Amino acid sequence: MRPRPRRDNLGKDQRVASPGTAAPQHQFIIIGAGMCGLYQLHKLLLAGADVTLLERADDVGGTWYRNRYPGCRFDSESYTYGYSFSKELLDEWDWSEHFAAQPETLRYVNHVVDKFKLRQHIQFGCSLERATFDDANNIWTLELAGGRTLTCRFLLTAIGLLSAPTLPRLAGMDSFLGPSFHTYYWPSEPLELAGKRVGIVGTGATGVQLIGEIADKVGDLIVFQRRPNWCAPLHNTPITASQMVSIRAAYDQIFEKCSATPGGFIHGPDRRRVADVPAEERLAFWEKLYASPGFGIWLGNFRDVLMDESANAQFSAFVADKIRQRVKDPAIAEQLIPKDHGFGVQRVPMETGYYEAYNRNNVHLANIEKTPIERVTPTGIRTTAQHHDLDLIVYATGFDAVTGAFDQIDFINATGQHLRDKWRDGPVNYLGMQSSGFPNLFMLAGPQSASLSTNFPRGIESAVDWATIFFQQIMERAITRVEPTVEAERQWTEHVKEMYQGLLLRKAKSWFTGYNSNVEGHDKIRYMIYNGGAPRYRQKLAEVAASGYEGFQLS
Image: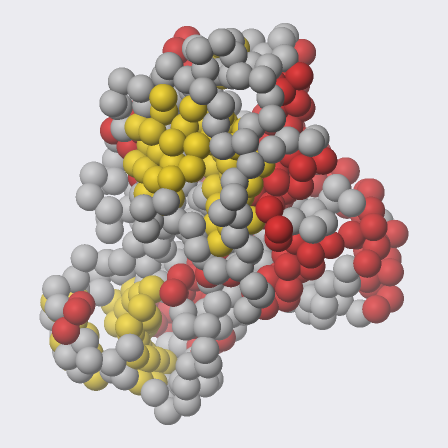
């Protein structure tokens, strides 16, 4: 483990404070040392800002530090995920796979941190519990676990969209005598799986990756599935030395293509309608997509597959047949085919050998929609059908997505309002960046920003680049308070809702729409992400900047 840098003699804000305004310890404090926070730290350091970054973990990486479960890897192409801001970085880093695994990605993040000398500006082991805004001085006071406090003028969050893991609400969970944990907390030390009876609760993206990876490494595997997901093959392969040379030579074109697509991937929608393409040509196109790597099958499909019920039903039937072909037991295959939603209206898990895992004699499906879990016992899990003896239980039950990490921190404004209360029925903000009533609090990849609905680094680079120019103007003009107007916030919220209306995902019970049965009160639609596409979002940001930051009050 690298040494943990701390800055106990904290520097003061070097700017001259406004009359009657106290000077904070820092101009900027960033929360979170994942891809977003690290990039913002780098940009602010280049701009000469007084900035420090707080990270609750013991090292950098964010989601790539925490998620160490077997099978964890990219589902966006490695060379589209890495940072694009440095040609030197692009030239010196070789990806080993088209979809890199977690250990390689974590090495990449550490390489970036060391290369750009960011570690000395990061304080590890700092868990933010409460942040309170001082209206008289325009300062945020941060209270950390352990009693330490810090102050800053501008508080920037980079706390991740999938960083608040949720456990199921099952009776007896604490009674199990063997190891049990959420995938987010998979042990960093080696875990012996050979010969073990393992239960996995959940078949979302994480569960699908884990099941495909460990099915042939355990004694028996019981998969507790409530609702099946539509999954598609990842088709991962190594990147050869010659392929890496070609990728490096094409980086400009790769990032240009990512910039042009709604999702920030190299996969963009086919503008044809399903009904306008002859059946034989349509089937050949779908076969090609199913045999191709990555998200092309989801994001490179006919556009109306995600917008029209009939088109979606036809493609869903195609994928259902693929599942039937891959799973030998017809009864099991039918249980793995979703009946409550069509393909692509929820996040599509990309899998390697997932369906084939159910062909193994040691893998068993427990359909807990038909036979619910009654309780966890000291020796396993009991459903209404039987008791399953287990040595290890893994909860692959997902996250309180998008707003969950914000809810874990008590953001309090000058009137005593808590951000979690304002957002109880869903996030309300402007551009996914700021929420009225909470001045100087910037959400770098906040709810309803394009970063959450795109290839994440492509989205955050755009947002951070825009924010940094804004911050530079704030510093140059000695501005001490920034807050969006209520009207700008209202208009943005209505725009976000409008962008949901043409998509089938508006009907889905997924984190796209704020559903999570493991979190009380999250059983209704909440508008969590921006569905207008990355190009439209960037255009809106540019218009706001060109108008002198219309919608923001600066003082």
